[in-house]
Image 1: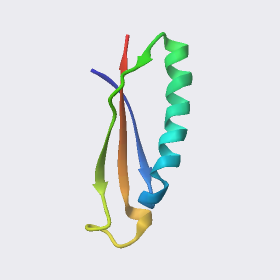
Image 2: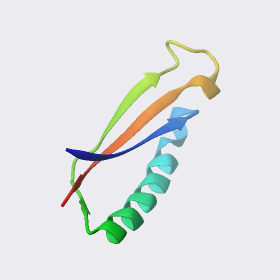
Image 3: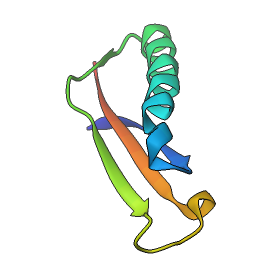
Length: 68
């Protein structure tokens, strides 16, 4: 499977903005390469508040499958 992926660093409250920026990048990438976005997406919490106290250490992986 082809997947667009990025890692967001910081407060979880700003994940909506991170998804918005990522989606904008995906739209331009898919248009340029003749692809389309799958409907599903997912987040993976790599470093979260339970494992690091400093929000600058928090990492969330954003993923969106791409289709031919």
